[in-house]
Length: 257
Image (tube, rainbow, N blue to C red; front, side, top):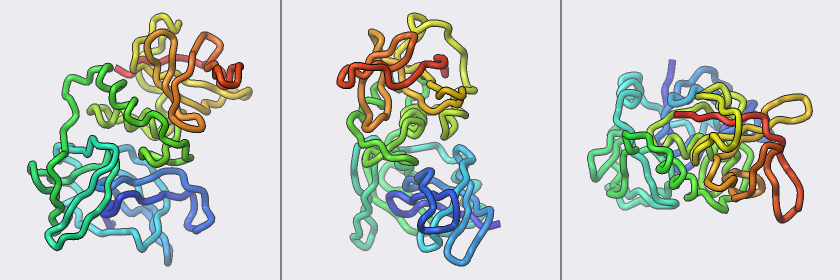
């Protein structure tokens, strides 16, 4: 089995091994993975942090050995907490990274991939107390980020990528998709029971979970729909004041921790 790591800012993951295939996810800088299948121009990978699978272009595959993969899985997580920043190499190259990028084997000044050092002084670790207020503060950093199916960055993000990243940057790893996230935590019966940072899930006419957002104070919700935005929420669902109507039908609310 082969192993790899994202050595550039963002790598798109696709449903199938084809340029025309739909993007379903993104691998951010420093995230590592296993290779589980291979084609001439594509490799299928499984991310270490959430087991999400998809195809990436072989030109963007950067191999690491098994020992480094296992060490990365045990390494204390450091992340970039700035909307956009850059790493510099010993040769003077600059590599842009976005909010939520991982800094592997970070020592306070450098991170390391194989024998290549990347200089960066702004990395931080998540707060170990797992406070919901911190999750909300992180979530607000994505406010007005454009909606992008499969996105996980401030340059483009989808509803479940948004909630996953807000929790990930506060030390809580949750699954990639809303249909998986809804299986976590404790179910709340009423909006009045919810606290800022809890997650609200929404379904379609067939009962499929199609959307997720983060509860805020005073019956508001932060969610990715067109862009990351703030709307009202009630027992019926999300009310968009610009449209003057409900846009998403509430299924249930979950306290993740």
